[in-house]
Amino acid sequence: MITYPVVEKFISINGEGQKAGELAAFIRMRGCNLSCNYCDTSWANTMDCPCEFLSTEELITWLTEHKIKNVTLTGGEPLLTKGIDIFIESLGSSGFSVEIETNGSVALDCFHNLLHRPAFTMDYKCPDSGMEQAMCTDNFSLLLSKDTVKFVVSSIADLEKARTICTHYKIADHCPIFLSPVFGRIDPKEIVEYMIEHHWNEARLQLQMHKFIWPPEQRGV
Image 1 (tube, rainbow, N blue to C red):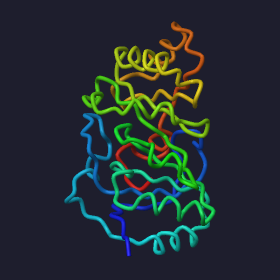
Image 2 (cartoon, rainbow, N blue to C red):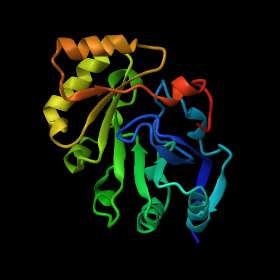
Image 3 (cartoon, rainbow, N blue to C red):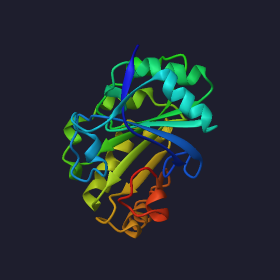
Image 4 (spheres, rainbow, N blue to C red):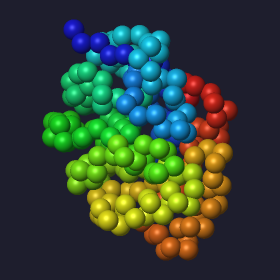
């Protein structure tokens, strides 16, 4: 029986993305292959992070008990979890609406043709993250309208790179584009001003809603 290394699971609202404000169950998997310098869940990224190993049956029972429709798999990097494709299919066949928060470094081709293909919220790591070289740009051609590309930005230079990437890969033809400020590093007003200056009609400013409802460092929300 396959079990999954879950470092936390909780019910809250989606704080960002196309389903922002909707109730969702979050299942956070252990481990990540990147080390972004602004990461707010770095505690979940190491393989020695405490976790509980839960089966598909245990997790679906938990979801059913909470009467939740939306399920967000996050991390860490959930797509690196062994057997995650089986879990995704099980969730989909059980009637759940599944979203995957992925860091942009994992090829999506093996997940794209799943019978119950999830929605992907895919990061593109901008230069200030220190992880841009790990990005898998082949993923852009696989994105659908239910997916999202998210640029976490901490400077004007990051915004410039985000706009260049969006133009080059014609991302707006595939799915929505979200610009999310690194909390405490760039004023969201600067992002709006940049969007106005460059007539960037396709991009959307996104603020992490949960960080305004609860303390920014609080877990399980």
